[in-house]
Amino acid sequence: MVLKVSASFMASLPGQFVMVRMRNGDDPFLSRPFSIYSAYSRGNDTYIEILYKVVGKGTEAFSRLREGDILNILGPLGRGFDIPSTCKKIALIAGGVGIAPLSFLAERYGEDIRGMEILCYMGAGTSESLAGLDRLEDLCSGVKISTDDGSRGHHGPVTELFKQDMDLYSDDDIQLYSCGPNPMLMSLQELLKDRPFACQVSLEERMACGIGACLGCVVKIKSGETGGGLVRVCKEGPVFDIYSVEFSEYNG
Ligand SMILES: Cc1cc2nc3c(=O)[nH]c(=O)nc-3n(C[C@H](O)[C@H](O)[C@H](O)COP(=O)(O)OP(=O)(O)OC[C@H]3O[C@@H](n4cnc5c(N)ncnc54)[C@H](O)[C@@H]3O)c2cc1C
Ligand code: FES
Image (cartoon, rainbow, N blue to C red; front, side, top):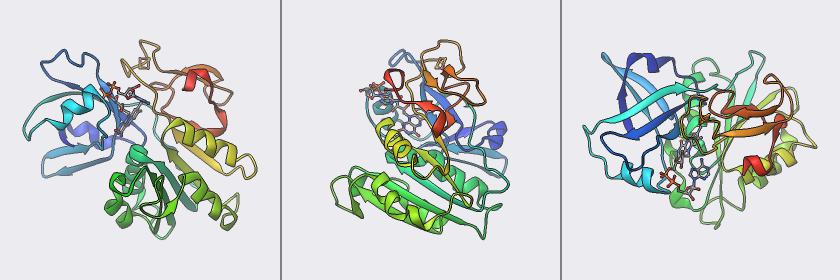
């Protein structure tokens, strides 16, 4: 979905998100969070894109929108990905629509990191649900695919695909960025116990307000910049160091 927004959105960082709500409607009443998939200007106008999967009421309502319809949008929100200046090589590990913030990362930092390798490991349920693949192939030096049903690429989870390549990388020259369902992020965390590459993840908790007020999105963090304990994904995140996330009953 392409949204015409205010010029301030040009400062959006990959990993940041927007809260989107149907206008003039109480159904659904609450806004829904979506990662910013792209941000650009054309002439005097600024646009963002979101890549959404229809899973329920809100996203189903989006799918019925037509060009020119108006939505309520709040953002950009949250803390985006950090790209260390020493970073030489990037691997993006995505599950499903988790590709959205990672594709924006490749788009936004493409200029700075030209000449460096950006590799992408992209997993989805089926070949039809590999959304955003063409764009990624333009932005990255290589895209490897996995599907749960084996209809395209590696047959199995994307973490398995990444595991096959782990020995190609050395600890000090690669930075990982990941986004996807929690079970996928948990297996990535497990995989990295043996090879602790630097890795930032964007979490997709359910959110009600998106601005730190309702405490509906808390997760448990072991330690780190935010001090540990229960933190709000919308405010202190959604991007966290993978080693600091405690995937537990709080984190689905
Ligand atoms: C920071 C952030 C970024 C996100 N970015 C994207 C994105 O780029 N593209 C995209 O398609 N989705 C994204 N999501 C998830 C998206 O917000 C939900 O899919 C959306 O809110 C569902 O709304 P709905 O009204 O269609 O579904 P609902 O009717 O609210 O729910 C339908 C079903 O989906 C489940 N569900 C809803 N939200 C989540 C969630 N966050 N995690 C796990 N299960 C959930 C519900 O439990 C229910 O079973 C993001 C979430 C967060 C927090
Ligand atoms: S969604 Fe309300 S505090 Fe995070």
